Length: 146
Image 1: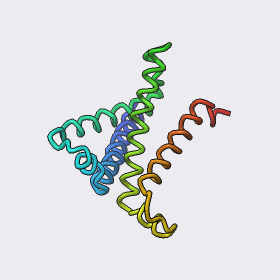
Image 2: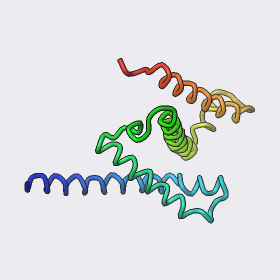
Image 3: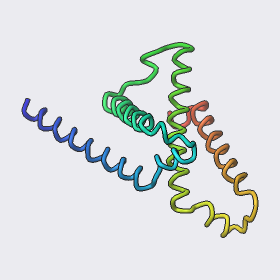
Image 4: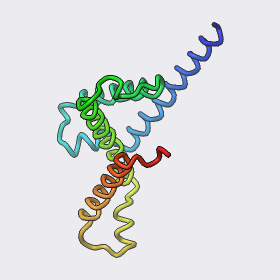
């Protein structure tokens, strides 16, 4: 029993350390402030904080307890829940990737080295469409499931 309590304390403390690191990275990269600046939604800053906290808790529960989202709802409604879940996860990861790329100036350096003078917005759109197509093929064709 004492070993379980000890492991619980270690796991809980480790979770705090990892969460602190992720929050520090988000603040350091300016992801949240960039989202707020781009969308002009400074009046809803607390909603951003709440959404991040809710997403963190949901991700932790789904990871630690190995809960599958389709357990909650089945059939057509279950598919809709999974689509919505995937959409939000994709938006989150895409936001992180774009924020990181913007911070390290990936696109300007790439375009300068490739000699691209015009059409940088088309490059970003092509990258987004390619990532979307790849994700859809991954899930539709069930790649990675043997």
